[in-house]
Length: 296
Image (cartoon, rainbow, N blue to C red; front, side, top):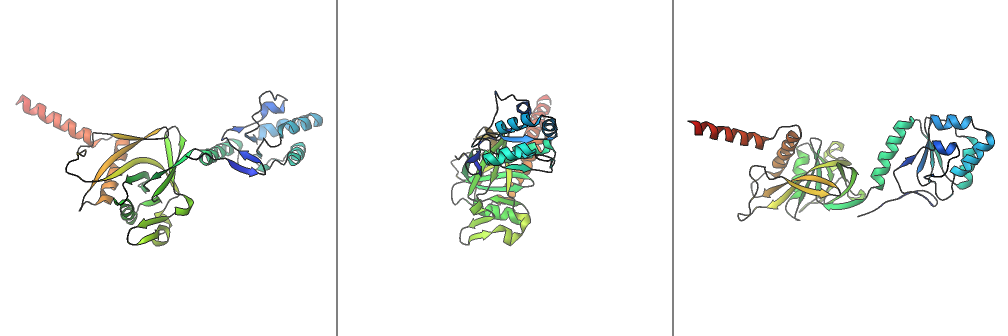
């Protein structure tokens, strides 16, 4: 597992995705000033600062610019930077950035970016593919055919995210995101051929940078001594960080088209999320048939 901080300038780092809008601080209240956060100033803060006395504004801006603590200031709507803030930030070597975006949208985009970059990460062994917009993580023992199955899925129009090593992080309480390490991006290893570049061979539409992991398909060598779920009623879960991801196990046997099976599994899972469960429909039909036969 890896914890990340973003280095923005010199010794200044961003270690939290929380963003502060220093409204109370502009009034002189510094009893609780989260100096370790990015300080976002919008129309409200800039308008208030303009109406402050020059000496008071200078004092407040100096207090905002705590050297080696405050990572940076961001000003939305390309509003002008107060001279006192500009001078105090330069003295403390703190960057002042501006954006054309409105404050609320800018805050949302920065939060999403920081949460993805600062989130705890870990690596999983498997192949991650996008099937009809659904992130499917294919797992299994080495040599079971994960990469070959992914290649078949790509040929059927689906998209590769990562092969062999999948880096995952938790975006929120219900979402796990998977992506490829930079060194393995767009690459697929096929035994007997070697490394192939999927984007070069199949085009930009055959790859994707990241996706939410919605389903895990585990490939397992078929054995007559092992019982596999035939009706789909035995639901399994795999916990990744704090999120439970549904898992199905598919037996690998000569003659089975794994790509079509996994494609069908993804479509069946999507149908379940939309309220239709074929297994329950079969069980209801069976119960109705039993009742009909028992009354005759």
